[in-house]
Image (tube, rainbow, N blue to C red; front, side, top):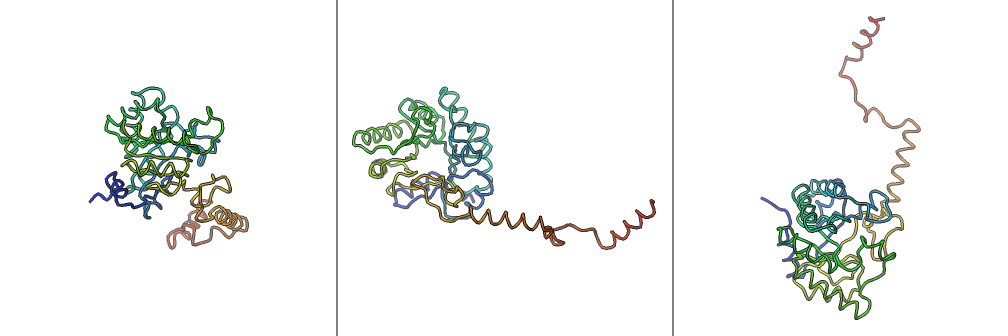
Length: 284
């Protein structure tokens, strides 16, 4: 029986006021661990360009890279609702290209939904992808792919006028086929209004507690980012410190010849070493 979480379960959670836990994850190993928890959604975010590749922005993430890691996450977490992030220039260059790229995530990587950082000029893109049978999560509020245009991010919808614009944008997204919203870095009061006003699941990324669900990146949750996290992130462990300690312990054992020991080595079958010695002696 298929136990994969679908959009049907996410919609049911919203209607029953049950919160949705989501994590941004970029690799098979972490996804496999997440799949053994109560987390319902994984987003393979283009933030992988920063968290995995060390870039300053999300912009260097390519389609091929994103499809590859999304497929890896799907293999690790076959049961979780999977959203793939459309990277920079994967949907901005035209509708046909956007549909083609969104389709790659579904057909090649097993994604159930694609995420687009959207403003009004891309309503036709969202509608076209949705009309093609692919579920779309519209990402509003702070949009990291716009960093080169904006220069520096600040909280969104902090004035009444800005809030009204964002609420209107959310409505436009849904009217054009968005099946879900992700709201990043937005005033909590406004995110709460959007969540209550619309029927689709609304996920908060630093937008307060009143959304249908919350998302953080896995490295932040695990405490691996060493002070580089945004204000809204929370760590639930300190794996950076514990990981460094483990690597140091390994290094010390190697340097002192304590690793590997016999228990971590392969050995010849009984009697074969003696036979080898005789063979070698006979060849001299």
